[in-house]
Image (cartoon, rainbow, N blue to C red; front, side, top):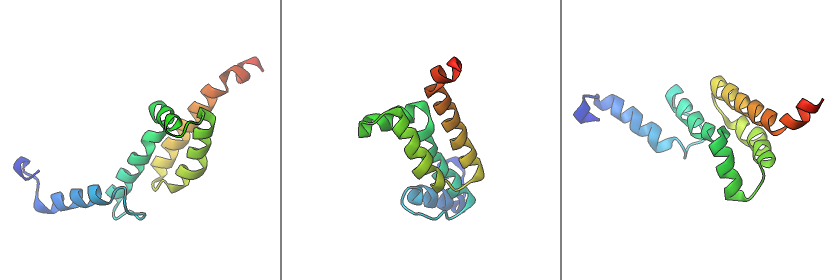
Length: 103
């Protein structure tokens, strides 16, 4: 980063975020909160849900329920929580589309 003109202070901030993004429970800064949330939010994408299902050999509904009940409360920003809830709403709607359409 130095080679590209970033200051030592900025490099230290980025390094601290990278170092602690998945190892510290508490965020050290707003930027750290954003990175921690982003790291968790990929799980809510269709690719993330499929990947988690394969890892644990569980179905989509169970993955979504785990994300809703155990990961969502750990998100740190209101924007991260909003995005996770939005992903969940879409995923649950797609999962239940056949039932919803018949009514």
